[in-house]
Length: 153
Image 1 (tube, rainbow, N blue to C red):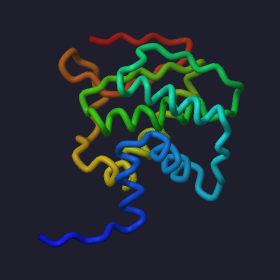
Image 2 (image 1 turned 45 degrees about the vertical axis):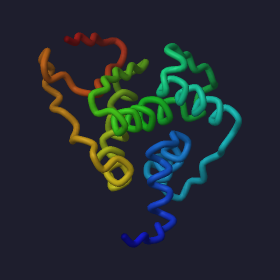
Image 3 (image 1 turned 180 degrees about the vertical axis):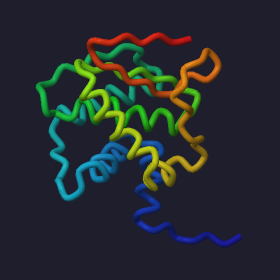
Image 4 (image 1 turned 30 degrees about the vertical axis):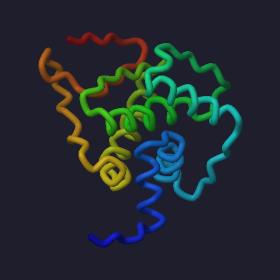
């Protein structure tokens, strides 16, 4: 058996599979090309808290940082895609204060999961489910904005 050296991009993608912080950096680069990611303490705190949610050591989380600190991209786009890449049976509801923001974040999420980044980071991920809501085939990620209602199985 011969071993081959991994390229830097292969190493980064493999790391993103297991490290949410690395996946978030790749997500930000995809959604905001050419814009440097400002890595403040608050971003590290959000990544750590969401990692605790992912590994089950914490079941509840409320993130309270000022506007424009990447809460929405971090949670409803990157974290949702990362969790679904790790466990395609996971179900996520993303609620927003407004329908316009919910639609924008859904587009960003779709761009991410349809990108090569998501497919390369999680090669065994199944394609997203239909948006048709039935008890047996509910979507893996649903978005809703206020004022609205969301009913599920």
